[in-house]
Length: 112
Image (cartoon, rainbow, N blue to C red):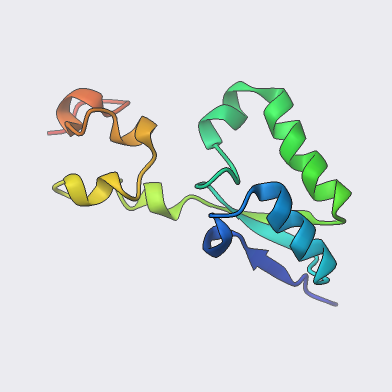
């Protein structure tokens, strides 16, 4: 049994997703762990726009890559952190950050 060799795209988030996929394919990787920052993967858009998600899959296919994991750990850091403050603004998406007031902008039930 062989294990796929993958590249985490987070450290490459300053490059466009297509460029990272092209490089990873040229370097012989089997697939990617795609970061949800930079332009690599917008999770909200993927949920709302089937064409966007298909585009991401097409980029992988053109470069003979598969996706083995999606990394959303930057936004995930805001799940249990208390307090959510200005330090988080640099690591969470603007949709998660909202206006910076977790009582007023957080999706889902109000925080206690």
